[in-house]
Figure 1 (cartoon, one colour):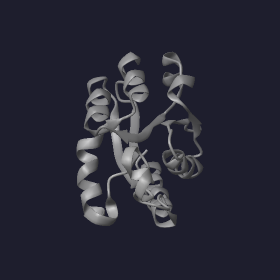
Figure 2 (spheres, rainbow, N blue to C red; figure 1 turned 120 degrees about the horizontal axis):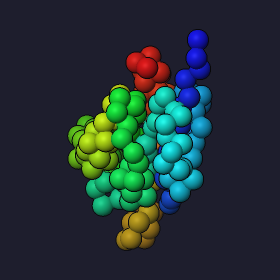
Figure 3 (cartoon, rainbow, N blue to C red; figure 1 turned 180 degrees about the vertical axis):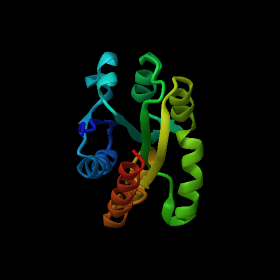
Length: 165
């Protein structure tokens, strides 16, 4: 039986929130992790499953991830998943807000992937520590996130992805 090759493409900038989630996913999926700048278009073809993730910036994934997908060749039938972390105020608005927010936050990347023919197996979002702009003066939002509960959710998500592919 052929071993399935998995790549996780992750852009994690401010506090490393998204990279923490990427490492949990990679461990469960036996995946390699690369930054978008480290990925060449032609190498995407050698992977059976590709995860795309970053923090959410101005309501969408990081521009480097979106640009990579724009420049990629057709991914007809190639299996993918999307993940992110967000500094949205979960403590105030609740986990349900984050789940609903992910639909909007993932839309740009999801649309680009689907227009290229990629098949999206699932989506995952977790809260991330946020000290952008004025938030640094009040100690930030989502302190200590992602946390163990978020990592367990990420592991469960990866397990479901593994089971569906």
